[in-house]
Length: 406
Image (cartoon, rainbow, N blue to C red; front, side, top):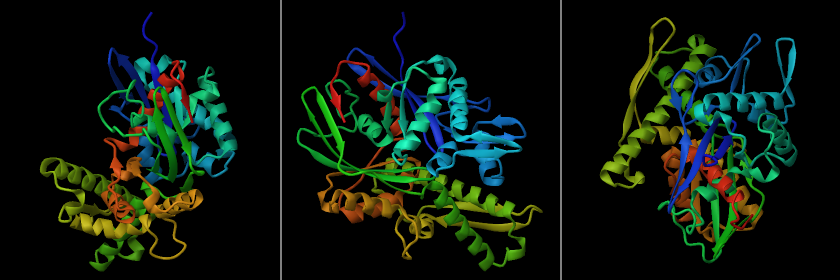
């Protein structure tokens, strides 16, 4: 009989993913399972559903539709977090639970050889209320009925497991921490639509792993999509200043096209920064002269904008997503300050800052946190996959005699 798969599943408002954990002798690995929707294989798939008449479409192509034609494109987890119970497609009212079940069903189909798994652990967003979490569990169990409550883990706890807290069993050789005495951690998870800040106290003694919330996590509806919208507005302003775009020409379709270009600029700058830091070993804070080209053309082929955008320009344009320039503007730091206030802590009380989620790749976010807390945040390779890797490790822990409390 083959070895049982230790599978982790992550469902968020922006993407879902799978990972598999294996222990071979003294070595262990948590590997992300590549998913295929017929258009190539990827480490993540958008957690979105597009309805074209009666047909539900799920896959990479839906992400573009979400920006270009948001009608009939839904993020089930976002709807759940907003308290929506159903959506109306044509003449049919579809419960949000049913949308989540469809996502999980599609995930199993896209997972290839891993499509037959009957057990896994599910990392869910910390921003869900207890009632919303109950609905999520019910929806997932339609496809994976054997899951028990212990198989569901908050995404922030899942990140702790990916940090390899228990070195005796999970010695992967990275993200090693000394938890022989209690330490306080701030985990900032910045995703597509939401940012959640969680403060933990963790300690590892012998064969026991203990972790607890110091206070309830604090969430804000600001994420990577807001960065793209904010930078798209900057590009629109630049085009209007140059006289190549007028208010009359700025259609909804063109605005969405510019938003896609803004997302590409973010991705290109991050990749260029990462390559420079790796090749020169220079701290990210010293990289201010990097730039990427932007080229935007209107529907008739008219050139709207063509210029190079520097990292400094980008950082300035999106800074209000991180720290509010005007009072009352939603920003990521509201989640950070909210979690510290709830825990009755000051920045100096935090021992480690952990950055996860796809938007944590935006380097200016780490720079702001470093300035505020006086310490360099810990960053993961592929930070958007930390939760799913941790979920697969967590599944090994709950299916073994290793004692764990949280």
